[in-house]
Amino acid sequence: MRRAVITLLLVCLGLVALLWLGQRSLIYFPTSGVGSAGEYGLPHAEPVAFETEDGLRLEGWFVPAARPPSGYTAVVFNGNAGHRGYRAELARRFAARGVATLLFDYRGYGGNPGLPSEQGLARDARAALACLRQRADVDRARIVYFGESLGAAVAVTLAADDPPAALVLRSPFASLEEMARVHFRGLPARWLLRDHYLSIDRIGTVRSPVLVIAGDADRVVPIEQSVALHEAAHDPKRLVVIEGADHNDDALAFGAEVVEAVLELLRTG
Image 1 (cartoon, rainbow, N blue to C red):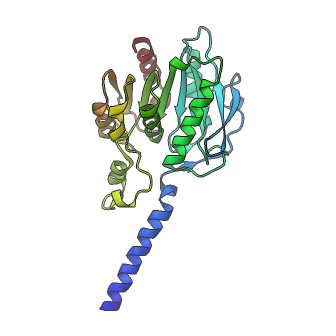
Image 2 (cartoon, rainbow, N blue to C red):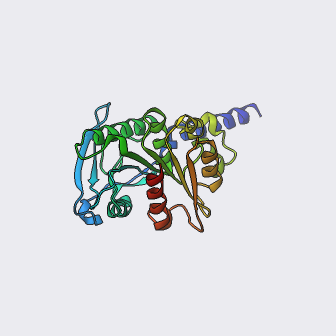
Image 3 (cartoon, helix red, strand yellow):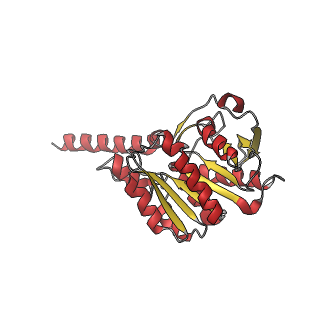
C-alpha cells in the first residue's frame, strides 16, 4: 500500500512538472512563413524592423492610411495564434478609412527569434510603440492600441503604463486564470500558471477611452469574460456585441461593425 501511494504521488508530481514546463505550448501557437505584405493585399505596406530591450529583432509592416488620413495610427496586438498576415484585412479596412496601422509579430511568431511569454510580449509591445513614436508620419498623441484576445491583455498591460489615445479590446478575457477555469476545469490554475495576464486587475488604472468588442457566440473567450472587463474599466467606455459571432469569425476579426465601432470611438473620444 505504501509503495502504491508513493508511486501515485510520483506520477502526480510528474504530471504537474509536465504542465509547468510545457504549459506555454498550450497558450502560444506561433506560425512562421509570413511572406510579403503584397501577398496579403497590402502592396503599399512598408516593412519595418525594431529591437526589443532584451535585444531581439522583430519585424512587421507599417500600413499607411489612404487619403484623407484621420491622423490616427493603430498598433495591432495579435492573439495567441498565427502571424501578422492574418490581420492584413483589418489593416486594409482601417487604411481605407484613413487609419494607419502597424502590424507586427511577437517573439517566436512570424519567423522572429525568441520564445513567447507574458514578460516577453510586454517587451515586444513597448518596442512596437517606440518604433511608431520614432516615425515622422505618426502623431504620437493619436496612437491607438488594438488588442485581440490574448493581445488584448498585452494591450491592457501597455496601456496601464503608457496610455494611448484609445484602447480597443476585441474578445478580451479577465485573466488567464479565468480562461483556464473555463477550458481546464479542475486544475489548480492559480498555482500552475507561469503567465497570468491579469487584465481585470489592470484595466481600472487605464484612463484612456475604452472600447470592448465581443461576440455573443464566442466559444474560446466567453462573452461574460469580456463583459466583466468592460465593467471594470473607467468611463468613457463602450461595449459592442457582435451577434452570432464566434471567436475567429470574420465579423469579429475585421467585420464592418468592428471597423465602424473603432471609427466612432476615434470621432467621439
